[in-house]
Image 1 (tube, rainbow, N blue to C red):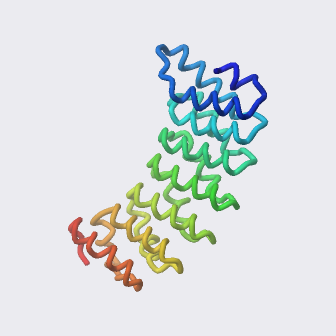
Image 2: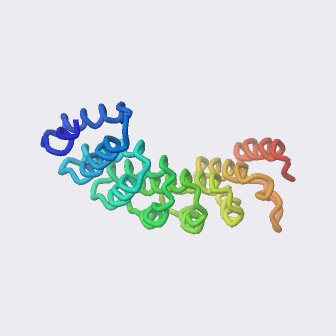
Length: 219
């Protein structure tokens, strides 16, 4: 299978081989390393589909080679490869990838920026907070929504005032995400020096106030 992935030249066969490899549990470290190296090599394959498949498969290989290869794939010219790499780095909770992910959060392709934001939320490193806060003002509602969600996962008090402002976002899905993020942060989100300002959207109010009651915050 490793030979097929690295040398076959047939994208269909390579993708099939990668899928099979993800179902194999290596019995020793040497075989595991060989699989990881093969998948990392496939990240540079001429076929974008092969690169994306390899990036997804590397989510199962938690080691330095996998993380380094995935970080490199964030610079791929094809969005679906960048998205796959970001998703795997998030699943691996690769702290080493925080800075590269932050740099790509300003990508002009919304789907790529969304993948970066979600990965930062999964990794959970507070270094990402300032960049995610900035992304709450992104022109893309998908990016704003994903950034709000990730800030809720990071639970950093610095994000409270920006998230409160996002509860007045022009799009309802961003407002819902901001409300959910504040609920994820917990009581500190509703005990700011400014107090809690009820959101103008009635549906957001119905989402946020019951949640606040459950976590014991003040309304």
